[in-house]
Image 1 (tube, rainbow over the protein chains, first blue to last red):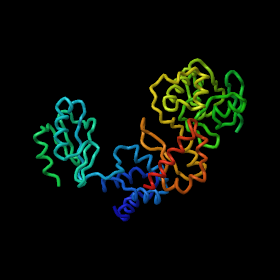
Image 2: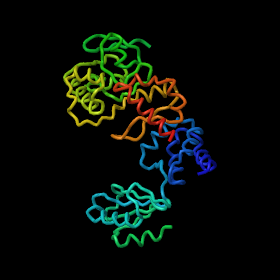
Image 3: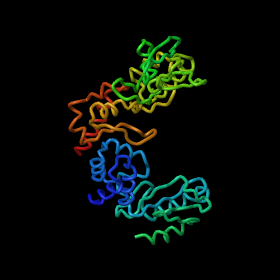
Image 4: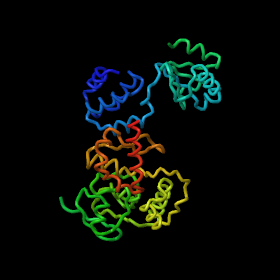
Length: 150
Length: 196
């Protein structure tokens, strides 16, 4: 991630220390993760100590300090999805993209996470890829879904 | 502004407005146990061991003495059966993390706490934040901070700053209420991982 993009994001938030989380969120959504260089830049420009940035970025689950894939895959394992077979969907997803929850593949194509409940239990089992919901998912349909993502 | 008059353990105490219950009590020699408190640092209210009972605005509540500002006619009790029970439980919980801390052992003795009540999860850290706050507020180096949250929360040095500042300073080590060695261990870990 180049310095100009980071500076642009920081300037958009008027370089205010109070907007730290918003700035980090913007970098996260632009870059899919928070590289150390980006955090150092933010720390310097906003005059916020690195220890505080580290505290915040490790506190919230929406921040990642390790590289994430281009496509974020979330498999819901909440109660409703669980009883409707989320585990079988998750097993199939793991087989298809070859990674476990919390991991990212070597090509930085996919990152996989399990989530507690995404609030659309009637659609269960649900998988979300890049914010796009795939409901009533049978394990046999998983392969078809992944074909759409490059 | 004039001094405020309040009552601590039945004694009349005067205190300046803005002072905390802890400061008012200490000024007349009433001791309230503390762990995360340091007179040079901003009050933190993290350990809750300084909990006291206050009667204010017609009700009794348990508050942290290190944070609660004195009020006119406030009635404070620093030693009651309820507070002893609270402090005992707090010490027992903290001892699951730091069973051999001298300060905790002394408090355990005082309040009859059982150091083996909770399953041991020896992290040596009770999240008092003394090292973190001292580095930020007094030394203004921000070499150490907290990372993660909940049961996984721990102290962590920033390797680049620590390599530059910490060997000469180490003033946070003796502040640790559990063991100075813990901070030393985390520091060495931070510096060696940077070297890798």
